[in-house]
Amino acid sequence: MARVLITGGAGFIGSAVIRHILDGQSFDGTVLNLDKLTYAANLKALDSVVSDSRYRFEKIDIVDWPATRQIFQDFRPEVVIHLAAETHVDRSIDDPFEFIRTNVQGTCNLLHAALETSAGMQNFRFVHVSTDEVFGSMDVGRSALEEDAYRPNSPYSASKAASDHFARAWHVTYGLPVIVTNCTNNYGPWQYPEKLIPVIVLNALSGRPLPIYGDGSNVRDWLFVEDHARAIWLAAQQGETGSNYNISGDAERSNVEVVNQVCTVLDELRPRSDGQSYTNQIKFVPDRPGHDRRYSLNSDRIENSLGWRPGVSFEEGFRRTVEWYVENAGELERNTQSASAERRGLRE
Image 1: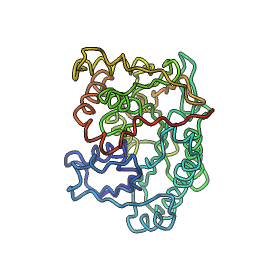
Image 2 (image 1 turned 90 degrees about the vertical axis):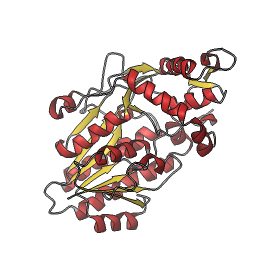
Image 3 (image 1 turned 135 degrees about the vertical axis):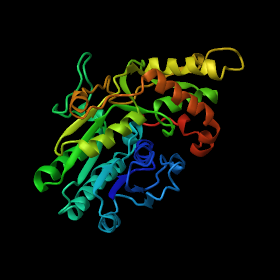
């Protein structure tokens, strides 16, 4: 029976990975979810698996070395999928040290705990999940390859770049079987309302302004979270240790395009009482410091070597996502205390 440890499993991507692994009866093993339960965690995203005998949960802060080490010694995982991280760029501008603690120190704790307990495990894998932001801004027509130099431009991306390098160092220096994945912008149900799509949906329905940084021309590639979960699990099972895999949604859109598309769908699903379009609520706000213009990844490696490709088109995934936030807007507003209205990451 496989023992799989997932950090950050109550988060947006982590919960999708757990649901994917435990979907159906093909997985014969145990999934242990380690999560600190920060503001962005939501155990309700795991309601569908909470009664599954193959699922366990432990509230652990990965920065706590003794607690993390003990969990590894007790559970002795055969696969580790590391997703626990502070991820919001604006928050990293306000408090970079929290990102260093969790994303760098926490990652090193996990790597070393894994090194101590994986000796003798022939098929052990440590999958470190990272971001496209480590490569910095990409010129139009160019997509980052796995071998490209890192050029992080925010405290968040710098902390993730550092953690990627430590993962590689534990592989090269200590022989830990590590795989690093770098993904583009995830979207889908259950994302905490501080990222673009949920912010826009909840603000629109509440009559608040729809903030767009700068001129809105910044481009992101959009990856449906269920496709990402499938790619992570595939890399954990079949990926080559010591390798990096880029995971791209092949759906580049500017921020202003995405906001306008949200408004179009909302105009149809939940028209404003005054008959006007939600686009009237759009407000361009001061850009975040160091805001990268474009992210883009070349995912040929995972497509050619492991056979993964995005299965959900942006149009399908986008509509499913907006519909989900419309249906759950009331509960999300209560539980997040209107976090979407709060502007962070400003520096004069």
